[in-house]
Image 1 (cartoon, rainbow, N blue to C red):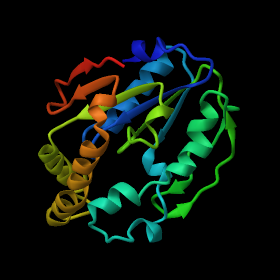
Image 2: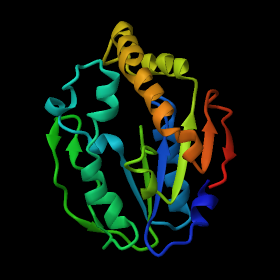
Image 3: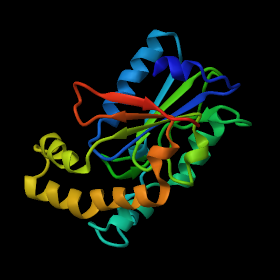
Image 4: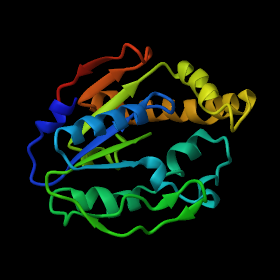
Length: 212
């Protein structure tokens, strides 16, 4: 995958999206890809969709377990384009901010503006990255595919110190899984990806390339 990213020929930073359902393995893949790219001498910007959430008071107008709310009301795509994706894209000045929100404190952030080298790589992971509002902002698109039912068990393990199994299962079955089904039906992200990583078996992932 690092070789594929390295083959992208643009005069501005290469913007890489790593999309997929919650608990699919996106963050692990993004972190590992960033390490390989840095080892190859690339300047890597690591960021994630959770750095571009709306504050909690704005995220739940349709209710805490609403799938439509998860898809439509959670992420500040305007800020994401304005402070990160567009400055790093064609015609941008490469002056960017890596985050606008801190999840731990539920606070709006305004970190210092940084200038990226022209040959930098943005490795960005999160949900819903290949939706119509964002799909044309990426030079390389990865979709991490996993059976949605498997993500429930992974989430229970991942969040066992913060939530009960019942709470996790309710959140996944009422909010996260239906929101992904809505996303799949409306945006068809796997068909928009350059690479699909099948990650049902994390120790044996399988990937396939897609024609642009």
